[in-house]
Image (cartoon, rainbow, N blue to C red; front, side, top):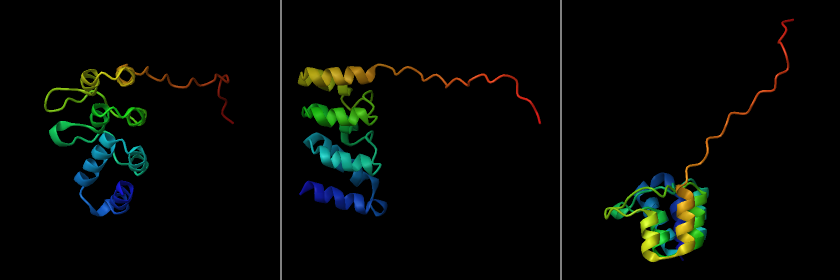
Length: 130
């Protein structure tokens, strides 16, 4: 089925156009084929591809209420800020659909992550040359 087709695309990804993989991840996300999306992520297919009408896999998953796929995409770095050709973002699509859980996931993803402070170096006193 779909997973076999996706596996074939991934198997030969060096020899096919990126557009095919981009479309595959968009379709899989929208249809809720989470195992295919996982396989693609594992094979380094970007979760931030832009497809037709400037839509992302995250927007596709949001539009069709694919909660687990939305979580997977966000957890793997999907950017919720791009706008499609209608000017919608993943959040505005979620609000139109009205799925509160998805809205909360997207809102949380929009909160800037705190900068990670560099690890402190312990002070071992003066360095002595030998």
